[in-house]
Amino acid sequence: MNVENREVLQTITSCSNVVPKKKDKNNDMSMLSREERRRRRRATQKYRTAHATRERIRVEAFNVAFAELRKLLPTLPPDKKLSKIEILRLAICYIAYLNHVLKA
Image (tube, rainbow, N blue to C red; front, side, top):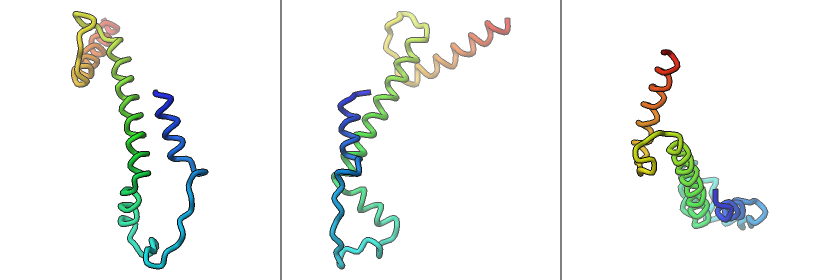
């Protein structure tokens, strides 16, 4: 996981840098439905930036997991590039093969 991304995410989501907003009679969030409040919150630049950072970290972890799984699977040639679905299908077949070897 990228340390820089983690630091950015912590900075963005930390509560210490949140400045309370002044209440405005015209913009009373309590009068809005739960869905509308959620929609407005998600529309802010801060929320979008934090969400993009979280998603980047999630996808990076996902790709690392696939790379580690790929290293455990036998293929010819050993450095053959496989798609994620190919990795999953090969892992299923390899697990079934190992299970068969154990039962024999």
